[in-house]
Image 1 (cartoon, rainbow, N blue to C red):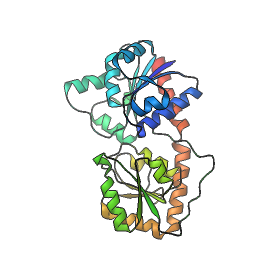
Image 2 (cartoon, helix red, strand yellow):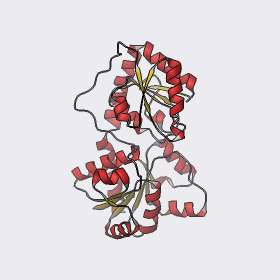
Image 3 (cartoon, rainbow, N blue to C red):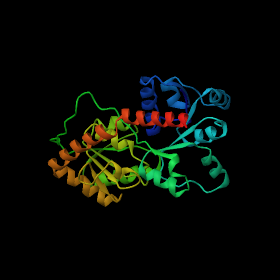
Image 4 (cartoon, rainbow, N blue to C red):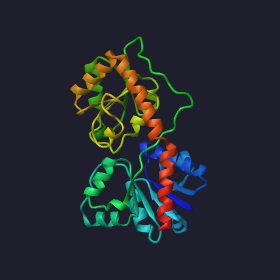
Length: 298
């Protein structure tokens, strides 16, 4: 089985990190793979260039084409005739209703929806259920299980520094200010989490929330907006604290964690257990490989 991976994202974000984990996992399964990418992902993997000539040439040699973002979805739909096309769907937005958009989405054999919330949007847009498989993001567990303890000083809150207005970085910063807590703001979320005691995530919409996995695997308790696929990982007061996304509720939730170390520690422990048992990279890789095999067998 030869799989062609396509990703046109210029920066290394959540989707590209999942591509890396998938490729590494498929290598362990001895799957033959070719990766065409741009920017940071291309440099990270030593991948081939994402250009028309290369995509065209490699598409003809592939058994399965796996498109990991919207632009590569378009190219796969155009060039993947005669072989299965798999498309990763990470956003909980409805499909556009134009003729070209409908044609593009009709050329896909299987959508890998990152959450049940994303699957629901695909169904609402007219995609048949048999063409959708939910494959959630995965993360690698640490060699040593971390321990969460409330610091002697005031807790620090990790915030993702993002230019995307849907991530609502400014709202998260204001919630920290109202809670009287120091924010650790960084474009590199893992670096911020390693310096913080809590994670605050208030996106306007989120397909799944791989950032939450990164926090949970470090036993950093999460306060998040209950949007998109986030409630599939965060059960309120069990594996995190959910809010309506408002600054006021987020500030109240942060104060609640800061004032109740037992609650915070329990949340951290239960979230870690959930993520390691249900959202590992191995599970994500195995489910994706099974989709490839089922398409080639049909």
